[in-house]
Length: 350
Image 1 (tube, helix red, strand yellow):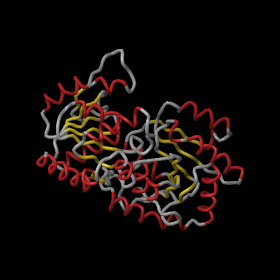
Image 2 (cartoon, one colour):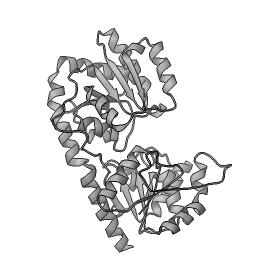
Image 3 (tube, one colour):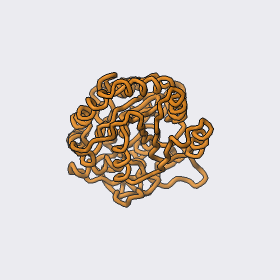
Image 4 (cartoon, one colour):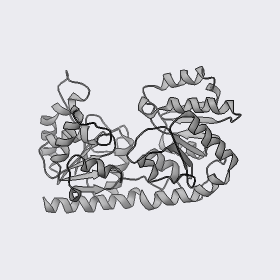
């Protein structure tokens, strides 16, 4: 298969490893190289004077040349309104579109991105809905149910052994979302500041990098919590896993999601998630049982922390259960086999 996707994406890299382990031969077609050097990557080109999202619309000739050289049995576009456009412009069939979240969930009618998504999805022989809640969004673009595969990659479970236990301190918080404005990390910093006024000395660790790193550091200092916040930057996978286990509570203020690999990794490590109450998170988190669902305000997170301090057994009860949920629903190895079987069937049908 030719996977038209961001070769530098952690999610893409994990998925390719899973698909390869399940027997697929995967060639990645991308505007960027894989930093790890593990993926078999082919570089797309577009006119130098075109930048941003316009490059997806102008990369058709390059995609056609590369995919003709690869000669795959099928083409997969990962993220409908980005690389999915390039996959459609390759004119190769069968073509699969993968909807991972905001490409269909937050895409108001009448806007160019909505029209582009409708066209890309309409041309697909199969659409992968990267989360059960995405199925309805894809159907809203006119895709019939029989052309939708509700499945997601999942995560590798090996880094998270069942006998390893995270911290038991309910005020040790961690997030692994990128430092991008969309993830609303400012809410988490304000929560740490408000918690301190209630004598809750929370410590928050950011694992990851992004365009607003300096802005967030400045906000932490401005709020007077610079000493309670750690910015690790981008780290390797072993260090990320170690840092997860150093904490007890995973936090995210992201307003919408597909299937968050960050959430799954934290749950696999036995952490207790405190996340925004929306449809994607409800599939993984039962409020008050294996996590807490909040309204996305700083006060909501502070109330959750206060409850965890008062009810420490919530953390211990969730540890084994959270890993089991991930093992049952999001095992990269098992889900990759299902993908390969579905893709193999598609190549025989089209």
